[in-house]
Length: 387
Image (tube, rainbow, N blue to C red):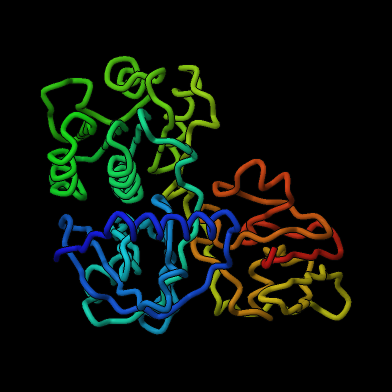
C-alpha cells in the first residue's frame, strides 16, 4: 500500500491547525471513518490507514506524536483502544500501527477482521507526546523505543528531519529480533533519505548483534552503556521515550543521573505493566445506592450541558464510571491513566487519583484530573470536560 505525502505547504498548514487545537486541548470526538488500507508490518503487526473526508480535515489535524482512540463492536461488546499516529500529517488520511497483544481482543480482531472498506469510530487526535522545540535548526533529538513504541517516534522523526536541513535524530530501538522490527523498510528509507542526520541503533534481546552493547535486554547497565557510548546526553536537545512502564522508568532514571533535566524528556507508555488492570465499560451495570447509605454527588459539564449522578460511597466508583450512566458519550479510551482522553477539570470538591501517566505537572496544578482514575472523597464533586 502506498501512502501519499503531503506537500510542504499543506503539511505546514496541518501542523499549524493541530498546534492551535492541541494548545487548547480540543474536545475529543468520535467520527466514523472508512479503512482505506491495511499493510502488514510484521507477523503480528499491521498499519491501518483511514480516509478522512475534507469536512473533517480540521478535526483530524494533529501533531507528530499524538494518538487516536478506536472504538469497535466485537462479538457484541464495545471495545476501545488508543493507538499512536505513525505518519506525518497528510491531507485526507491518518494511519496507526496495531500490534497483536497476547490475549488482546481488539488487536487480534484488527489483524484478522479489519479490511479496506470497513468503518469504525475514530476519535479526534489527542496527546502531549510532542516536541516543545520552537526551532529545529541544528537540534539533536533522540528517541528510545521498544516494540510498538516506535509508532509515534516514526512520525516525530520523519517530520523533524523533513522540517530542517540541519536537525539530527538518533533512535535506539529495542526488539526481540530483526523479525519483530516494525517499520523496518520505512526506517531504511528514512536512513537513505537522511544518511548523515539519522542514526538508528537496533537492540535485540534474542538475536546476536556485532556490538555486544546492542545484544540483550535494555536493562539498567545496557541503557547506561548506550548513554555513555552511543548517544551522549549532553549532545541531545530533547528526548522521547516510548515503551512499557519498566523500560521508560529505567531510561528516565538513567537520564536524570546523567544530568538531563526532566523538562527535556517526553515519555509515553503503551502499557503500565499492571496486572489485571480494570477497564471501564460503557455497558457496566449501574451502581444503585441503597436508600439508607451515603452517596457522592457528581456534577459534570460536557458539550455545554450539565448532568448529575449519585455514586454510592461503598462502590468507590471513579468519576468516569459514574458519569457514563448519565452521559454515555463521556470521553475515554484506555481507562488506565495513560492516554489522557478522559481529562477534565475539577471545579469543586476533592478526589484521589489512583494513577497518572498522562497529565503534566502544570495541568495537575491547574486542577485537571483523569476521570478514569479519580474517586470522589467529598460529598460533592464538580467536573468540567469543556474547559
